[in-house]
Every structure is written in structure tokens, then in C-alpha cells.
Amino acid sequence: MLKSISMIHWLKIGLIAAVLSLAGHSQVAQAWWFWTPGDTVDNVGYKPEQPIPFSHKLHSGDRKIPCEYCHSSARRSFSSGIPSGNTCMGCHKIVRTDRDSIKKITEAYNNNQPIEWVKVHDLPDFVRFPHKRHVQAKEQGGAGLACQECHGKVEEMEVVEQGAPLQMGWCIGCHKERKAPLDCLSCHY
Image (cartoon, rainbow, N blue to C red; front, side):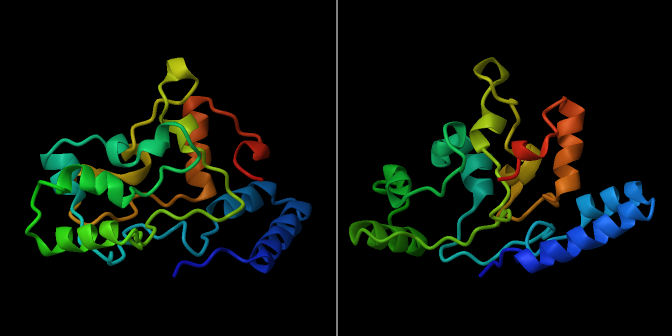
């Protein structure tokens, strides 16, 4: 299971950054702080085995199903959400019902049991990343980002993997490029 970064880890990082700043090395401290890897954010290429094989290449690539059909809360919530069995069964009550993986989904659905998907893109608990603000169109008050800008070309992936470092410096680079807010409270609780 994925671990979150401990408070002690962050206190150590903060202390080192403060010492570097006081010693007159504020740019070094700032760069080091921004790019300090965490336990889960820098897992580029991380692709855990899922309880049921699921091809995003087949569904969003070949079949052209939009990301937000399955991850419908992305446009209206902080989280993109993991599709419920009900979403899967919208098609798979009639499509490919003879496949073993679909039988597993059907069994879980019929028994009102969730599929225990393994999270791929995991941010520390103190980071606030509202999907809504990032994926909504600009005219709706969002940034209008495509899912692929953070998640990579998911429509080409048989198995989804983390495609970006998701470190603070990477996010700040995006905010600077798009002239988005850079104050700490935009992203941190």
C-alpha cells in the first residue's frame, strides 16, 4: 500500500531548507525544497497490478470513451473518482459478458462489493489538487487542462502508469507557465 510522507520527514526538509536560507543560499534552498522527492509523488513509471486487468488503451484509445465518462467526478469535484461497478455495468451487462474479467466485475456488482483498485497517482494528504479547477473549461472558471497533461497518454496505455513526477516544482512550473496562483494556500492545507 502507498505511504504518505510523514510529518517528521517534512520537518527535517524544512529545517535543512531554513539553514540553507539563513546561510545565504536561498535559491539553493528553494530549488532543493521544490524538488525533494516524496514517498509517492516521484514514482514516474509506477504501474501497480490491479485486481482486474483493465486496458485504458482499449476503452479510451480504441473505443474513444472520454475520460470523464468513467471518471465523471473530475469535472465537478476535488477527486477524479474511481468508477463504480455501476459505471462498468452500463456497458458490460451486454458487452463481452463471457470474459473472466467481466465476470469478476459482474460478481462484485451483483454482491454490491467495490472493486479494490490500486491508486496510481497519489499526492500527500496536505496537498490540495482539485480536479474540477484543472479540467473545467476556462469559460467555466477552470484551467481547461487535458487529463493527459498530468496523467500522460492514458489512451495508449494497456496498464496505467504514473507519467509525471507530481513534485511541487513540477506543479509550480505549470502554474508559472499558465500564470496561475503561486501562493502556498492555493495547493496546501
